[in-house]
Image (cartoon, rainbow, N blue to C red; front, side, top):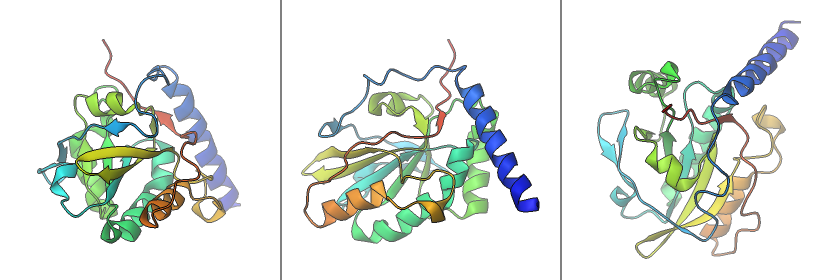
Length: 211
């Protein structure tokens, strides 16, 4: 009975968050990068107070860039899976760089201080960066949390190889049976084309600054 009530509570919370999210219109899907585009680099403040950039990772083959946040129920459900991706692929050349672009004025639970607390309590193995200006989210075309961009290093460029969801089950990791990000990174590591290059990101909308 407790398990059923817990599931119902999660579902209702997710529904509420989606309804609230619609009050803040996401950017047009026509904006941002497409697969094959060259992505801009960035230098953002990490939860340890230092600034992190893809340029810092000299030996990286690419990156798993995840736009996420503290407060979205979907981000919470994917939290351990994001960490698992970093633990699996960082040493193979594809570390996770997580970015929180939510405006803390609109969503106070996504303030820098709250990011620090969450990263510490959850023992994140990856950088958790604050996109204060929201310019990185806008340039990438990110609209959801979580929203993933797999980037491949090609010389000095960062080429977009995959955009979308982490896997095919946002509610339960154990029920997922298609792993989009893993499949994309594995293909890149093997020198093969990525079969599924784009999927629909499922999550809450990014909370944009209000004019």
